[in-house]
Amino acid sequence: MFHQSGGCCDGSSPMCYPLGEFKVGGQDVLVGEIAGCPFYMGKAQHKLWQNTDLTIDVVDGRGASFSLEIPEGKRFIVRSK
Image 1 (cartoon, rainbow, N blue to C red):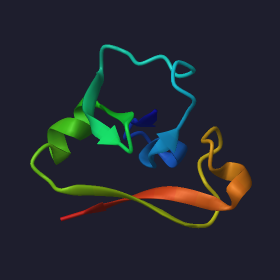
Image 2: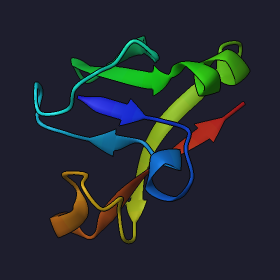
Image 3: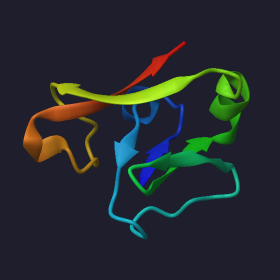
């Protein structure tokens, strides 16, 4: 699953977790799916971006501290229109 909290630092990047290992809370909104994996966003950030086209992309670099892509030397980023 993917989650983006909208907080500072790591929370501002989409993070990937094994399904069921991240507890989704009442302030999280299901935005859609990425390759069959649910993508949640913090409610406050979703309110700001709800009318924006978002693309979750993968680039070279250091990922967020708890996200699954860390050992791969990749990181997820959000691109918006």
